[in-house]
Length: 193
Image 1: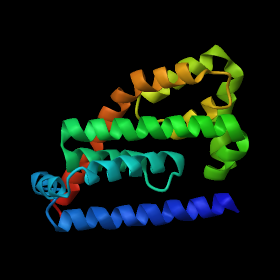
Image 2 (image 1 turned 135 degrees about the horizontal axis):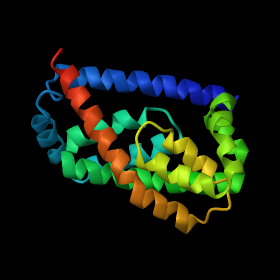
Image 3 (image 1 turned 90 degrees about the vertical axis):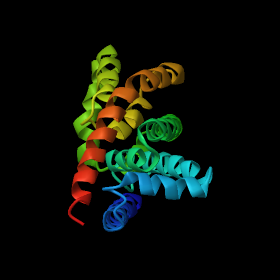
Image 4 (image 1 turned 180 degrees about the horizontal axis):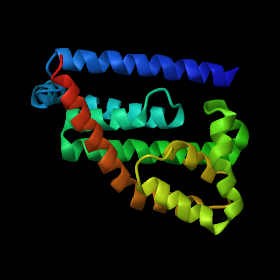
């Protein structure tokens, strides 16, 4: 039952994100990000805090695609601040899901992902030390399901310290590629509104 409600949250979150993208495009915020940045600066410290919270939530409960929200963060806050807010939110979210899986195990993972996706990556646990290398590489490069792999890492004997070290060192490269790639795509799409 929980997996179905998570899937619905993902659908609703994706639809809301699409509506936001259309709104940002029609408001010319995607083609002129400086105007959106000025608007958000008027909101003060609350805007970055809300964005970081959204990033934390989207890691723990995958209701919106993380790559898209990272791209929006760079558009909204600029390349440096957007990257920093993305990084903080994603690290905190990654820590939370690791600890949740350490406490609740496989049951937690299967509440937020389907069995087929879980089965696709769980085999790496049988590879012992190779899992840690695969995990670090997957966090380093875009295209892997980072959040799911962070959960699977929670099933291993990996220490929290090693887990966070891998995330802190490897996440910036993948985040940079995702954020700027998605940002450029969103700006391109903004030209059609």
